[in-house]
Image 1 (cartoon, helix red, strand yellow):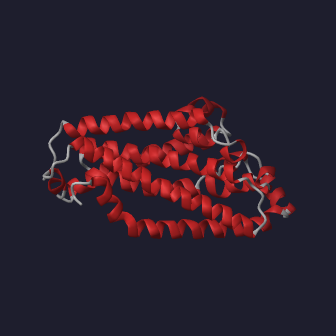
Image 2 (cartoon, helix red, strand yellow):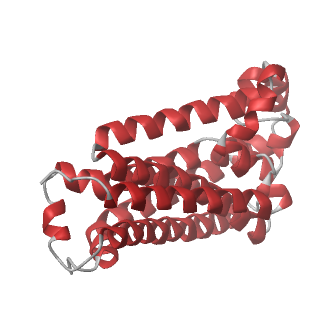
Image 3 (spheres, one colour):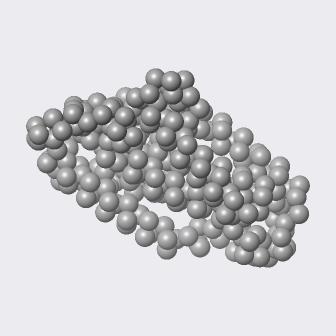
Length: 267
């Protein structure tokens, strides 16, 4: 089991994965059950229209009237902040623990004592993160689809898949960043802090850029721009933006392999 990092990681995370899946599904159900109270509420629309655009931007709402639509409601209540935040917590925790966590726990030597190359440790850890986040993505799509049926929320499954894939890719990017920093430093706390800081700054730059003109040029430097700016819940998946994530993750994995193979590890 120890010689196969992928299988060991999946096995070790199966219980927490089930709890994460249950928690995310329940959260989605609760949020969607509130949709009918928003859809037919003119007072809510007037309240949103009276709010400062900067405040709406921070909440991921670009158009108050759009909040009354299924895609706009899901974007504003789930996909702009809450759902990506949960996925980022999962991914960053996983990525920073994969190597740096094992090293700080003084268990990395047990793994490296087996006939497995350091590059394989990185690649299989990354593969396990992809598999688990893809699994969460499937749970999210199913929860969205089934919950939407209960309130007659009309939105295509393809749009739910597009929005979910974009959020999963965003989380994978930050998880891979955490993995690369952990592989380079061997310090989980430092890796988690740096990755979380990048995520927070990226979110603020992208959100406020919708309302603050001088921040607009900086939006394209934020990973959140490539996850949400194309409005996948309405327009479908943007393949160009998805490719940006794929290329960025490939580079980060390469950095992780390069740095981990060339430094001494704490045993």
